[in-house]
Length: 170
Ligand code: HEC
Image (cartoon, rainbow, N blue to C red; front, side, top):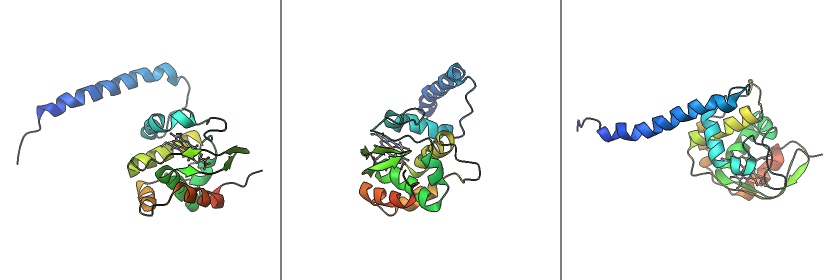
């Protein structure tokens, strides 16, 4: 069982490397004086899976998908709020919610197909890069996602839980 690594691996890695190099090369073009992203891996996950509804910068779409630029930082600062974030991405969310004084009543799909580390990275990008949670807040760990994955609920239950953790509406 001591087969040398298949040369095919190197071949497969090359396009990935090229893509990375291209991505890195294209960065300065739009980086400007934008602050560095603290969770680049989470940013990639977000742009690939979440930006279509929440917008690339998390500004949301009026009446459709809520902005993610403030509440997630508050959620990340409490144990119940951290559970809420994990539950939202694992099980989705539906039912009327109020975010920054506006109503949203649509359906957030679940992302249970993404693994714990991937979801934690996406949530850290949301909480720290988009919503600017302070450095005193601990980054979400994959274990916190795993803990919620062990207790499946549905999007209505996630909505119910949110009532206990969201900032009170105006
Ligand atoms: C198909 C559109 C869509 C996609 C894709 C999507 N969301 Fe959502 N998201 C929503 C909607 C709609 C809501 C609000 C649900 C409601 O009205 O109850 C929401 C709510 C949320 C909330 C809760 C906000 C709050 O104040 O409670 C978080 C956090 C969130 N999304 C993060 C994400 C992340 C992270 C991803 C990618 C992994 C993602 N969303 C992908 C539509 C989407």
